[in-house]
Structures are given as C-alpha cells and as structure tokens.
Length: 314
Image (tube, rainbow, N blue to C red; front, side, top):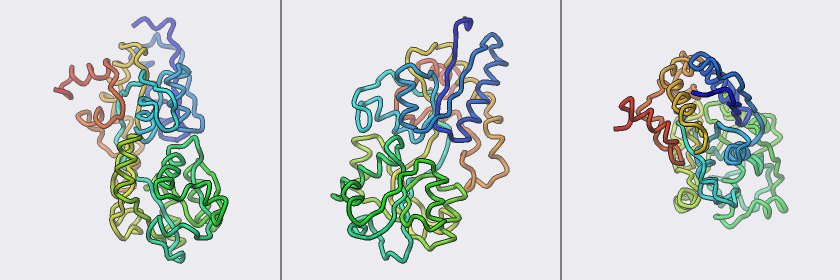
C-alpha cells in the first residue's frame, strides 16, 4: 500500500466506545502498515453530522448508531436533503439497543396518544441526533407535532447526551425521557428512582419509519432495564454500531481495516468480557459471519472482498 500521502481521518459522536475502537484501529494499522503515520480522530457531537462529514470528504471513516443514520443519507431523506450515495459500510459492531420512551407511572399514561394535553417536562435529543429526528417524526405521525406540544402543555429540554438526558429524569428535572442506551447505568437508576411506564409505538408508525427512513422495528422486551419493563413494548431498534466509509477510500485501506477488526476482534471485545451480556454494550463474541449484515448501505467492495476471501460471505 502506498501510504506516504495518506492522512486518515476518523470521526464520530463522542461515545467512549467509538473512541476506543478508533484507537484500536489506529494502533493496529500502525502494526500492520508501519508506513501509515497520519491518523486524526475527531469526536464531535452529533451522529448525523458525522455521517455528513464522511460523505463530504471531511472524514474517511465514521461510526454511528443506528445504521439508519447512513441509510437516510444514502437515500437523501429525512435530515439529508441530498442523496449521499457514496457512503459504504465496512461492518456493524454487534450492539443490542432500543429507543426507550419512558414516563413516570403517576401520569397514568400507557400510550403516546394519551400524552396530548398532559403537563410535563420532556427531555429529548435535538436535531443533530437520530433520536431527536425519530421522535419528531413519530409525534408527527400521531398528529401531535413536538412544536405544538412545546408551545402548549409540555416543557421541552433538548439534550443530546444520553447520560445527561436520563439524569434529568433521575434528578426530577424531567418527567418523560426518550432516548437510547438501554444497558447504561442512568436508565437503571431512573427506573429505580421512579416507577416508569414504557410507551409502545403503534405498528403502522413503526412500519412508516422503516419504509421511509430505514429505521428497523423491534421490541423492548419484558425484563429489560433491570426488570423494569413489565410488558413487551414495540419500539424502534437502535442496534448496531456502524463503521462506515466512502466509495473512494482506497480498497487496500478498507480491506486492511476489515481484516484488523476480524482478526484482532478479541481486542475489541476485551473491555466488555466479564460483563453479563445484558449489561454489555457490545454483544460478544464478534461474529464475522454476521457483522456485514444489516449495515444500512452497500458494503465497500474491499470489505466485501475480505469477507468473501475468508468464507464469511459465500
């Protein structure tokens, strides 16, 4: 590989695990290809801006969750007014998550429709987050736009960072919280501090979100969040940490990055082993037969070639 001119730029939301995985990739690239000297890692707020940065050539490798972020950009829908069909997937790290819509039991609400007219404080992510985008589209589909509710009975607090948003519920500064990260400590603490109802999203709205924007539907299963979820609750899937790139990033580099993750997967798993799977953000062991599936956009040809060369794609 001719690396003399390569300046590799990686970008994601400042999620600790994303930064850790970028660091492993950087270190292992240095071992496998010592002449690769220049690597820049940027951890900046916003999953959606990270996708935009890679598509525009401001970064070469990105991570985001869920993969629907890249799907929307590829199609030119939702928050992306133009098609960014140069996006390509490398793999999706296994991660099992859901969108969680939680309201304290004292509000006597068991459905999203019943929220209309309720006086409450709502903590939700902003416009640069796939959570904020999804919430707005879901509320629109229910005929209760967030802007109208915010102008009426709801006080809306915009907070992108998961830990801060859920902590507002723990502290009593927010009533309703909608976010992802079901295995993180703040959700367990929120459920311990207040009895919560977890609200389902109507099937026809889940179908619309899947059809129009690429979000997948799933179930927040009974027993999740430390047993606080009492019923299977239809919602949006937030699984998968997508590692992605552009179609013009070199085949040699993408092949090598794919090889590194697969052949050194024990290093990527290391920080999670020892945790029960229901507490681990990474679903381990990483299975190379699965990580190329459900990635939301086409595979980069070099990543696909690696999987074929090694029998993971027949």
